[in-house]
Image (cartoon, rainbow, N blue to C red; front, top):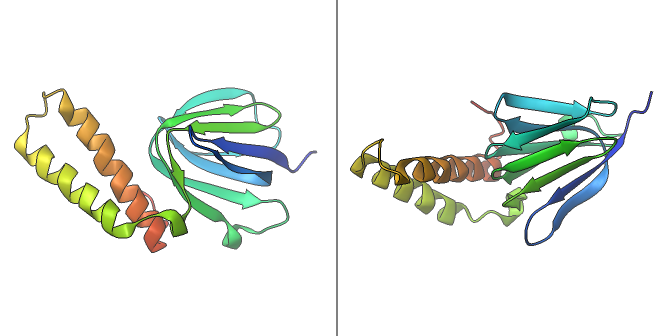
Length: 142
């Protein structure tokens, strides 16, 4: 049985990642999901969350972590992730992420949950929290 497959992570700005891997874990609308070689064909929407990659011939202690925003994953013989944004921990500006979190929290307190902006602010808040977690090496998830 084939153990590895090609993963490509594509953002509007760049090919963020391309490599042979054994496992990728993302946050879908159903929750955390992992995909390995031989997985059944699927297309799923992604939520802002941690992208975890176990590269070929590496163990789970050496997984790569990145912050990604919403998008979708296409699982065929290979896997392609299309996302609005992706960042490695070293690319994340922690102060900027913390300011974004504070702005979103402040605005959410000021508006009604029925306000059309509420959902957008919740996504911005989740994205900022995720970036802070990835940057800080806190790879736990809720």
